[in-house]
Length: 432
Image: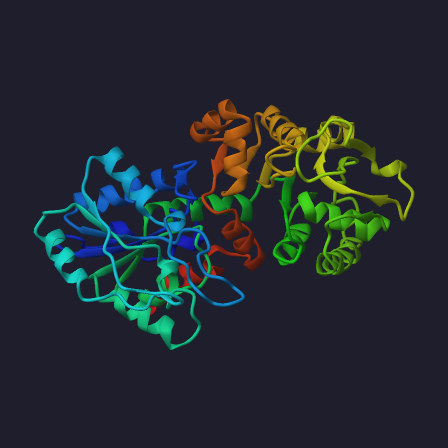
């Protein structure tokens, strides 16, 4: 728990009669629907503590990606609204939460936090409402900006409150709402943030053998984390498109759907992995499909990579076959592990699930290992495919489900939780 040593903690803050701005990661809405409230539920302890200590709560979170990366335009729509989150909190906690509205610029989204919010804050202080939930932070021009707009937005956010609390471990990107507000307000880590950091220690100070399983749709977004894991872990297993790129790079297979950029990264990774022989465990059985439209009869087949000739042309590789997890070498690695970290969906969802189910079931057979799951799709697919195991995982001390898999990978890459920019920002606030 060394990363908590210099971190200002919410339990040490004087919250009585203070307006507390809380950054959470409630990014659980897709097209206006909440598919899993886990990340919301995990922050309720922090919200209860603030209320019990006499604080007044203003919440904020990002939802989705309303900003067009090519044009820079921000689209405000119901698909990325916080309204479903507010409805969920109101129904669960029996409280009244208000969402302020501001003028919309057709291309820039919300340009400012307008003074009209002061009337709502007055209602909050007078106990006429129980909380405020700001609109999606990514609807604001300054949230993802890298210029003066970011500083201006951070300043406006700080002007709403007396204290800032970050409970958004999964929101590790250095945006105005995660690293800017700290410059202007006393800042603290919420209970969820503390819990996530404590569980990161189970990765940093792991019991050996340690297995990491990582999958993803792009090699370039995972490459630095994969280098770090190959150095750190006893074994590394790949899945998804990054495994396809690895196979193409190592065996010269021509696989549909792999970008030149991913192949370039994969070739460098294959060369790097030669320094660590026997660490990278290959899953030998893969599922080839002629179509991306589904698991269509007679249009998919299983291959053993060890029996394919170099240069073989393949259609889309959309899953790892369950046969891979029946291999004695693979089973032996998982059965003897003491620590297992999983940030992986092995197949192309929602139709190719065999590999993910086989992986999770094999991991669960190891009753002694600490099993740490990354957030996002990894968590949602565990719940969708193996709901009974998901429920067990929520309560078992041998399991922990992080709210942000990307944040865990970034922390591993940096070698410490304090390497995450929002956590470092809280520490810097204490120093200043």
